[in-house]
Amino acid sequence: MRYFSLLLSIAATALPAAQGAYLGELTWPEAEQQLATTPVVIIPFGAGFKEHGPHIPMNADAVVMEYLVKQAVEHKQVLAAPPVLHGWLPAFRDYPGSEVADATAFISYMTSISEALVRSGAQRLLYLNLSIGKASGLPLGIVAREIRVQHGVPTLLLNWEDMETDEIAEFTEQAAGGHGDEIETSINLFLQGDKVQMDKAVKDERLDTLKDYPGYRPGLFARNPGDPAYSDTGIFGDATKATAEKGRRAMEIMQQQLFRAIDGFSQEPLVEQTE
Image (cartoon, rainbow, N blue to C red; front, side, top):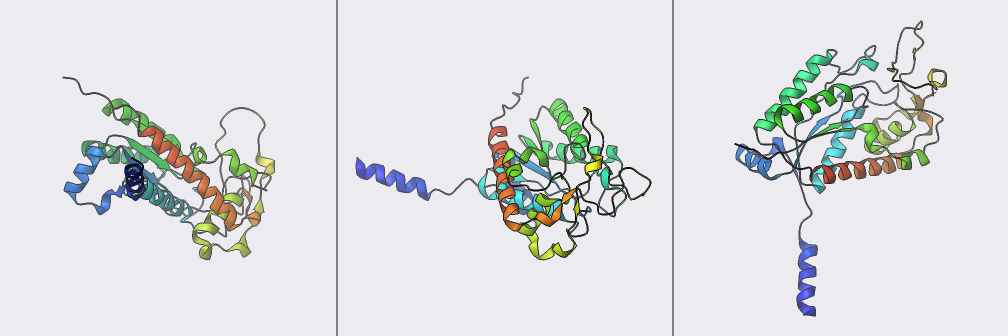
């Protein structure tokens, strides 16, 4: 009996870990089969080029997106759709960047992508938004709701801030931040340190722009000196406090949160088709 148990133990450790795939790397018969059996399809969004201050490459969102999707594909039973690199990013409109300025056009585009995946057999759609919830997350939330209502397919929108936890705050030193800051710079030092120009990193915590009253006040990085939201750096935070180790720890936490979302969402009940 002990010998048999040992064999089972060895066999279990020899089994490969759950692994997903990139839809673009499959043939159509493979894709058709896997869409029918894989619980979650990820639709990843990360701006292909968006300002992150004078020190971080404009591909910062896309690089984080690629890293997290890679981890998901390597460790979870997911299918990753090709990434979306252009989106609705009004806070950065004064700067060069990959924005679809018409929010309705972005909604229409993302809806069409989603419906194509549904027609192809996707069981559940996870929108991975490497932007904030009250920016690109607003139109993506509309898409997620409409796909659920119109097609009966479970959807989940996971925004950047959904993957941040109090653990990250524990090793953050800046007084305030949120864009091109200590944490985002640290993440880029970890993921693409050779492209980060720390000699140009600045501190711009914009403490005078913070509010202490309720309500949603859309943020802005204005380049008009007459605008109260004027920024000559394009950042919010203290990038000078960034380190690659902080970036490694932040990405580990965000990856864990993504995995939690995938694990939970993959159990979401499917709509039963009735005659």
